[in-house]
Structures are given as structure tokens and as C-alpha cells.
Amino acid sequence: MSKFDFRLRVIAIPVLLGLGLIGAGANASLAKSASPTLCGINAQSSGGMIALQAAFKSDVAVNGSYQLRIVTSGPGGSSNVSQGGGFTAAANDVVTLGQVSVNSGSTYEVDFKVNANGIDLDCSQEIASLR
Image: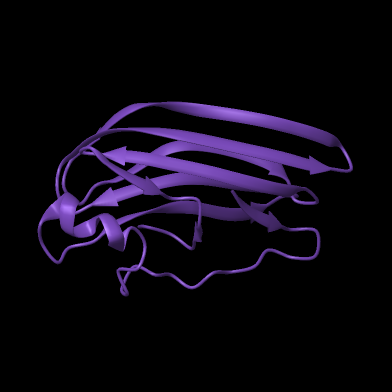
């Protein structure tokens, strides 16, 4: 699980899209080309809340499933949210697979796993955006 602490401020993680680092290990098996499969968590702060969006993109059509688990704790209490299910994505489409809003004073842990065309990906890292 990846742990992100937003008590002090929201940290911007560089976009890794151009580098093709996210999901690079599964890239060759998934696409059989140099085109990347990208996935991760997009965190956006607004109005005292942080919107966490699980996103996926591949340069090839994908049938798959995902599991998203977010555990939060903070001054207002704690929560444990699990989402999951099947999905399809056309080539080059960005697909939102789950979304949760948490209090900006909270600490949260994210576990985001994707199985795309039979390949397992760990997508728990934070990204700036896939769009």
C-alpha cells in the first residue's frame, strides 16, 4: 500500500506519462509494442476535500478488472472504502475506475490493482493526470 499524508499540503508528483514509467513492466506483455499502459491515482484538492480518482489508460483495447481500497484516518474519524469490478477500455481512452473524496486533513493509504488483458498491474502510485 502507498501512504500519502496530506496534513501539511498536497504534494504534486511529476507526470510520468512522457517517461512511460507507470506500468512499464507489463507494457511489453500487454501491448507487444513500445506504447505504454498508464494507471494511477489522481489527487485534486478543492474546498477542504481531496478527490482521489483511480484512472487507467492503454494504447490497446483492454478487458479487465480492478480493485481499489482506500483507508483514511484523521481528526474526523476513519474510513475504509473498497471498490472493484470489471471494465473495458478502448485503445487510448482514459477510464475512471473509482473515485473517493476525503477530508484534506486526513492521512490516506491507497491500494489500486488492475488486471488488464490477463496482466496484473500495481497502480497505487499517485500521478498528476492521465488526460
